[in-house]
Image (cartoon, rainbow, N blue to C red):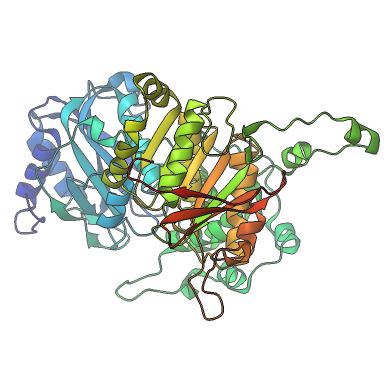
Amino acid sequence: MGTVQAINPAQNLDQWFTKIFGQQTGYIYAATKTHDEDRKWAKRFFHWPNEKDFLITYYLENTATHDVYFCPSLFTRPTADHESITKELFYGTYWLWADFDYGDPPSSKKLAELNIPEPTIKVRSSEKNKQHWYWRLELFQTDPNVLEGVNRRLTYALEADLGGWDYQQSLRPPGTIHQESKKTVLLLSSNESYYSLAAFDNIPEPPSDAFLDIKLGTIPDSNAIAFKYAFPDDTAELFRKQVHELSIKDGKSRADRSEALMRLGYDFAEMGMSNEEIYSLLRNVDLRWKKFSSKNSDPERQYKNLLKIIRRARIKVPLTNPDDTIAEIPVFSHKKFLATHVEIDWLIENLIHKKGRVIVAGPPEVGKTQFSVWIGQHLALGKDVLKWHIPRRIKTLVFSMEMGHSELQMLVDGMDTNFTDEERDFLDQYMDYSPLGYSIPMDKPRGQAIFIALLEKFQPEVVIMDSLGVAIDDDIKSDVVVNKTFQFINAIVRAKYGCSTWWIHHMRKEQIGNKAPKKLADLYGSQYIGSNADTVIGLWPLSSGDIEVNYLKLRLAAKPKSFKIRRTNHC
């Protein structure tokens, strides 16, 4: 099935619905929406395949004047106009889907990084970036909760429309007309690939509040908000514009009001506004631009669509409650402060404590990753290593953003000969490996959300991160970027989850006047990298073949003397 051709629209729709529903029988949910101020929806049900001809006629007769939709799920019976389509009526579907309404859909490279299969079908609903994607399942899925669970993970991972994951989602069939743009809904690609649900198991769960309904309190007056905040010039300019003043991109006949509203949603969230304040200003703008509002339209439509914008903005800029934040800040009187009993919980005595921050740094190929994994395995075993005492077994995770599966497996396999069968059993219980081989940016909300989901699922006490340079997407030399990254590490990873971090990093390159960059000041990047560490260990190769282990920083213990180790294939 190739790109939809306009020569025989009936045949194209026949092919489309046959691909979507195949040999199954049930009722297809179809709908139309008027393209006027009222934007009225009307739903219909057609039995598949008995009423296929009526279904096709329905779309052909309505697409010239109405926006038309269908649901990729089959249902057990029709519903009356006033009756909801409940999960009890869900019969099943062959498909997973994601709907892209804001921003560009991800590239094939991005899909590979996220370990998400290529879609079976891609459809463009209007402009180039307005698409919906489908993945064909090898088995007909009859559990709506399973369907929605995978769709939610796909939606969040791909940064798609957060309202487009449910079992009764309405999408546009190819060959029909998108009324606002007057463009034909186009089938971009279609193949015969299909997938088991297991192919999507590696997609992390979204944060628990990502899809929660936003409940608004009292909506403040937009004029009061305008005086409360200092608006950046470009945000203020966009907020004041009338609809005819919006920029029109090349190749478009009119401005993209959805995109402009979404940009304002992001800007308002980054300014620190509450959900109610963002809603008030977006409503003010929408009453002028009339994207979701009109003279006779249902106010509920505007409310739901503006909340979708706020929910998406909150992925990038999560909402914080000032009262909660203040309540979490500890404050003691002088005597109470001195009377508090604080005992350091050493994970490696005098080296790393619970919630501690370690950096292991050195030049390329000195063995930083091998050294760190070796220490991590001994943490998991509760077994002393080198000159260090490890008092108990520690749940440890190697989060490898540099080495992929094969490279890390080869490294770990070489070390495995050092352990007894009993020790391997303990390693299986206390040691986890995540061999990504690509960046999960810790300076970006998206990467932070993925990492939080990982912490919640595996609950490590120590995470060995390979490496700091790959974990920061923006300029690692920027003090602002590095401080922002460590604010997340300190406030969330350490304070909330009680997790210690062990970062692998590298030194600056050799320069004239500094042929041996192995001091704390030689850490590559912002000065605040070293400042945000409790312990910094330097590895330096010697001409003898040994490696010098240097204590560059120890915040909570006296610095011992440097010592030497030798690298082998096994440790």
